[in-house]
Image 1 (cartoon, rainbow over the protein chains, first blue to last red):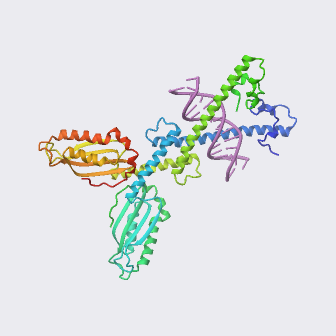
Image 2: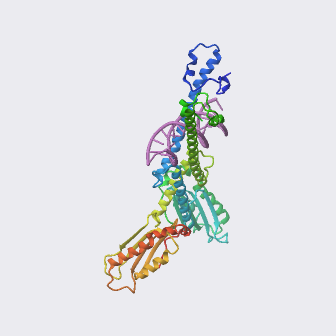
Image 3: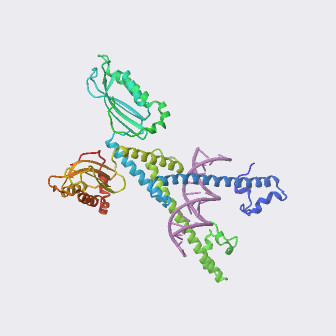
Length: 228
Length: 228
DNA sequence: TGTAACACGTGATCC
DNA sequence: TGGATCACGTGTTAC
């Protein structure tokens, strides 16, 4: 049976912290299996203790590295102790969150959630004059506009107006669309709506967009604009 | 709890964790000076150790309280270990900072620094048609607009245009001003400029504004607007 | 002098 | 088991 850390294998008088214990294997051994087990136990115990304390040191270092990164991000946080630093971080995050929340109340700022919605803006469903409101929110990337334009053209739609906002690598857009001059007179708005949803979803929510995550960071914020 | 601190005074068999030790003073003492020294030393040692470990516990609790506050602020940070949580906080802060920085590139968003600047917008300094551009940035508060309006009237100025942005309890404004119909024809623009700076500074940068810090939180963000 | 902050090694606990 | 995380009490240093 293998030894363990259990104290039942050790006499009460044995102090594992005393160096003499390490020398036990050198002296004649009347109970070889137990003695050898003692030696192995001691070695394994030391090794375990060392790896434990090393792992704990690595953990502390990881935490402290993040703390010092945070310290660089928060102005005037030099000389603060850990708790005060974290307190400042809490305030900072709350403040920044509040500001971005205020802004998104007024501006059409993108969220972190990919989505596409299509609605009718008026009742007459089977009419060329019908307006569709198409919204999307997704990661931004350079090709997005040309892909959208092509898709809209292919569906024989015309952009009557648009409100686009890009922020932090995300983009949100609202398009006002209606059938264009190439569109059939008897176009079925319901199926057009479905097609539009499919096409927009493919462009905006396709998993391949994640490839552009880094690239999209260079997109800048811009105010609501018209796109046609 | 170890007794190494005073091991030279204590026999190996003495366990400081046993209550009997605390009762030593009650029993007959054959070596009074040594016993008393032991007692005092031991008591002081225990008290010091206790207060040390209690202080350390308070410190840990302070840090952990901030960490759990942060955990509430960061979505999906449940179940993260401390280092991962702090990593998420770093990302979050960077992200929010980037977003607000992007926005302030385009919008005239207020900074954390109080300031007032006055400039001429054209060369003709001694003319009623001269435009002054007055900017300020300070804590927002309800009375600010009426105070500004009164000051501008008192200086016999007229607001030709303004761009005001309020965000996170701070407000930044840029005013286009020119002498109004009540102004003297030979008004000295240089002294007008000085007076305007003094008055605006009193309104915007006066230390009393700090009283309104809380109140000003209810001010909301609004887009650049015209104020006259 | 004691108070505060930090790093350290260890025991406990959880997969 | 072994690896990882956490709370704890302690030694150390600075003011």
